[in-house]
Each structure stands twice: as structure tokens, then as C-alpha cells.
Image (cartoon, rainbow, N blue to C red; front, side, top):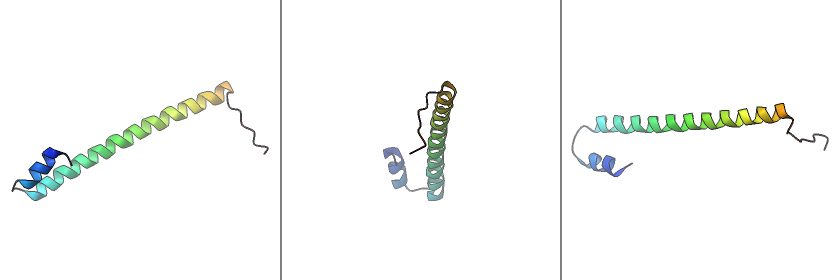
Length: 63
């Protein structure tokens, strides 16, 4: 919780609205984190496929 949110929570008012606003902010943060993780995963997958195409993978499955 940021300082502004904390100060707002001390002010008398509509607690339900404050809770809804804070919940919305948390959803947005999680959404951004999920989007970032998805982009990073897709980037890794593209690099992995490129290694397969080039034959750069040196894996010995016989051991």
C-alpha cells in the first residue's frame, strides 16, 4: 500500500469504496505481472525453437 492509499484509509469515508479501489489496483498489478511472465515465456520458447532449428542443442540422453 502506497502512502497515498494509507492516508486515504485514515480519512473517514466510504470504506467499501476504498476496499474496491485497492482490490482493483491489486488486480491490475497481477494482470501486468501475468502479461510480463507470458511475454518472457514466449521469448524463451522462441529461442528454444531457434536452437532446435539450428541444431545448437547438444543433449546426450544415453546416460
